[in-house]
Length: 379
Image (cartoon, rainbow, N blue to C red; front, side, top):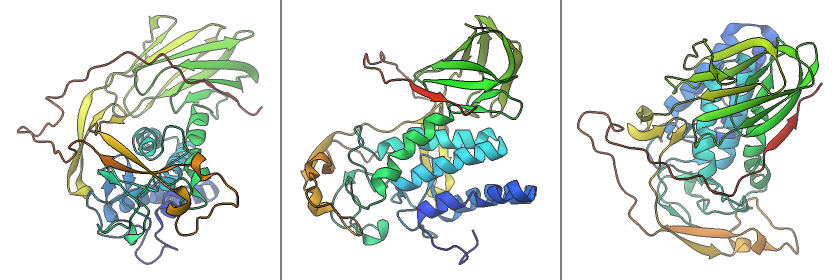
């Protein structure tokens, strides 16, 4: 990431290519190459700013010195950062990349797409009180009209941006070099794989993480099978707890590391991993010391009243975007979004702890449930 030595400064390309040294290390076996990727990660956020939610400032092309809260990141950049984090997790085995992927996946990425995935925000800003179709005049996005929720703004966006979920959940359980499995990204799922002496097992995971602290795993096996099973402990979790069939496991999981159990597993074995969450504050020094408030892997945001103003999707498309002849643009709506309540608040505290006066209240989980993702690992 030296000045003048990048092919271009498109934020998506940066989110993809910063992992390259670690990939080269797979061939060279030189730890200096792996360390170069960590250095890339740090340099990018020093040069282009830290965006609350885990990203760096890259409205479209990242620009040195543009580090104020107006800066955004392209939605495709979120997805490519998540993919790089997942690849680096597999290469290095470092839980840091799992934590980083969760930060983007749970906070930045969801805010950039509509719930039905039929509209998206091309660049997303953490400090975004207005979504509009006119050109930006705030030093954001190179004066391009890319601030609206436009589904076909550019040809690549619908497929690449919506791949975020598809890329994230298959990493729920990964195979390990010792013929075991490791729970890396947490979500409700069911995975079938061959472990140990190549015996097939199925592990189901039940959870509403990150909106709850408990993760529940059940082993399904035709006969007893010996293999190691590991779990990633997020760096933010100070006091994780692990239990097997209702009994507390004596191993002591540590934040930012793995906990691993190697034993003979039986059909119906149940493991519970509790990841207690606490409220904490984080200062983004390279974003003018902006402060965000976290609860475990989640970053809080202010609830703002919204007024959606429909737009003609055939007219809002810009740049290299185009519609196929006869396409029904009404099925891919565009909107402007205007705030109907105050949003320009800031945190004020006396003792330097923004999180201290905050309390978390929980409501009941909605009755409507999402379907469980099922994956069969290669033999």
